[in-house]
Length: 231
Figure 1: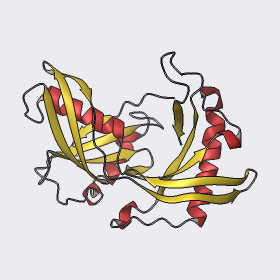
Figure 2: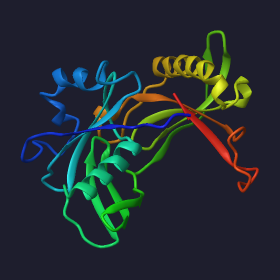
Figure 3: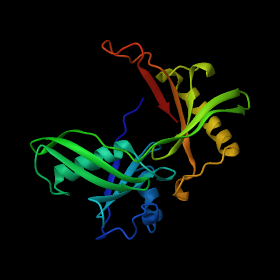
Figure 4: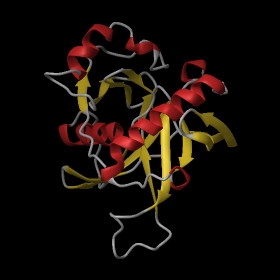
């Protein structure tokens, strides 16, 4: 429903002090507001702060307008593009790969080049898993809601949208935001979350609504195509 354009910041230090990127945010708090908020930023701004690494090609920690993030796909894609097109990381060949430490773990990310320009990129995320399956919760003014919790760099509650009646189209965006926030607060209040080995990652990051693709389905796509909206 929106196209993200993350802000990239190069931090002037020789190496990250810690392999845990959540700990490397120390000393950046006073700058994050100036980076993310108006007039330089906006409510939906994301950013990646890039430093040299002791054990990967780059260390990156991630920002949004309310603090720090654990992993961000479009920020990884933007970081790769910057690294290869500016020469920040020296590589040659039509296929180049980066290893990037983010707060959630290590990302392996290949890029396919067209000369000196990045043509397309992909990345292999940190290990993902289902944390809770087929859970039910009562949400005031909504009723009983079935949800799962899964981790893919952050914990999200996954909810089928059709039983709640909203469709995954732009005209329903405000309603989806309201429902997503109420569901997140209810899940956070009743369902403890514990990452298996990194306590700093033990929190719910939001709600993902899933359902059938509707208005933006392309003619060549099969009827079983699914859509999602992340709140």
